[in-house]
Amino acid sequence: MSQQDQYVLALDQGTTSSRAIIFNESGNVIGQKQIPFTQIYPKPGWVEHDPMEIWKTQYDAAVGAIENAQVTPGQIAAIGITNQRETTLVWERATGKPVHNAIVWQCRRSAQICQELRAMGLSDMIHARTGLVLDPYFSGTKLVWMFNELPGLKARAERGELMFGTVDSWLVYNLTGRHATDATNACRTLLFNIRKGCWDDDILRTLGIPASILPEVLPSSADYGMTKKGLFGAEIPVTGCAGDQQAALFGHACFRPGSAKNTYGTGCFTLMNTGSTPVDSRHNLLTTIAWDLGKGYTYALEGSVFIAGAVIQWLRDELKIIDDSAESERLARSVEDSGGVYLVPAFVGMGAPYWDAEARGTIVGITRGTGRAHITRAAIEAIAYQSYDLLVAMERDFGKPLPFIKADGGASGNNFLMQFQADILDRPVILPEVNEVTALGAAYLAGLRTGYWASLEEVELNWRKRREFTPDMPSEKRARLLEGWRKAVDTARVFK
Ligand code: ADP
Image (cartoon, helix red, strand yellow):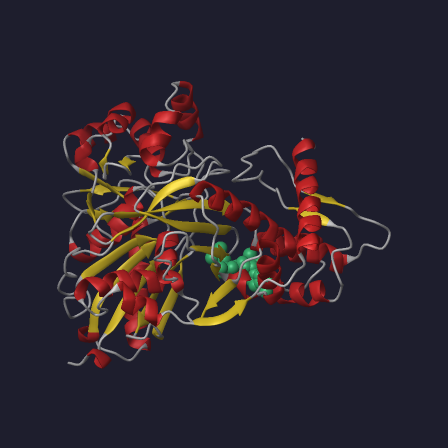
């Protein structure tokens, strides 16, 4: 069978839906299927998913995508997995049955455990070894919560009866029977030493986690086994695996140190490739593994803006000053500038580089002439200013200027935002032809392993830009606007 008749299937297991996308050799989408699943909120601040529903929707999405693409399972050369990160699952080794719902990355139930670990003075050690901060976001303290709250669970773990994994492991286990994860997912657990490349014995001992519960850590492009007979009607090799943000960095072909991507969704996720050295941030950014192609790790700096596209939803749903997100662009363009108005959407505090949990949102600079167009424009501009703050922090940590940034995500469809981002950053902002960069990254990792794509150079050649926004703002104007933003942020942080 020629390469033309062969495809790669990416499983994109997200927080609200399971998706499957089939790509051809040029990286184009041939077929896809998306299935939403249930969000479970047992208490305020707690979020769970049903592991069986995750598996079922993901499997059905895969079968549906193959059907929609009008190909046969035999034409799928490889499967790559990308997933919501940090979400924590435990299941029985003997039966494969989950012992509890998955505890989702957003879930804050282990805040108290983190507080206790901080009080024990462990923050610096954990940060130095894992690149992370002691926060309920990461898997480790979610697992500790299960041990503390579910009777007998820890004893069973110590007897070797249980398996822990993030969503990638859960899918690999159900697809091939192996208990494995990749380095990009392992490094989000709070249990993995990103410098030594192994589970950290000291952290495991401190948290009381037996090593036997942990999955084997494989490269992101590696052999995860063949799909079980009976699943697809053909045995397909699973050969790619990466957490969603790292997969997006890969799908954008950000292979060179210093290249970065920003995903403009509900929040923004920004990652910068820092090459073979883990860069320790002086601005509270996370240090993470970008990927492992089996030849040593590539590292990244990571930061996120909590409220990005969400501020547009807020204008629509709470203020009701726009009907839909697309209207925000028309309205922003209907005025010459924001009229001196700044909106700081610190609805849930401010993330990197500020890390101010108590800061609250504010709108400053309002005059009698301020209208909804100015406020809308200020809201869009705020997405760009917050990303600017993150990207500048990354540049400083890395020590070299960014050449450009690559963008994706729902709000990257806003041309006004993209141009303003380029202007404020004074760097080009580039959009890819294929917007499905996360799934594409997983497909590339899988296809590189089987030889479907021959090399990173070939993948890079495959990357095509749809549009480039070039900076076009006089430097005095940029400095003046940024000065205003700084004052607005200070105001948001003073009012507590
Ligand atoms: P997520 O994956 O985080 O759910 P998406 O990548 O689907 O997010 O993007 C959805 C977000 O993008 C929403 O918050 C929405 O308000 C925002 N968004 C979508 N289109 C636009 C637009 N044209 N202008 C500004 N924001 C937009």
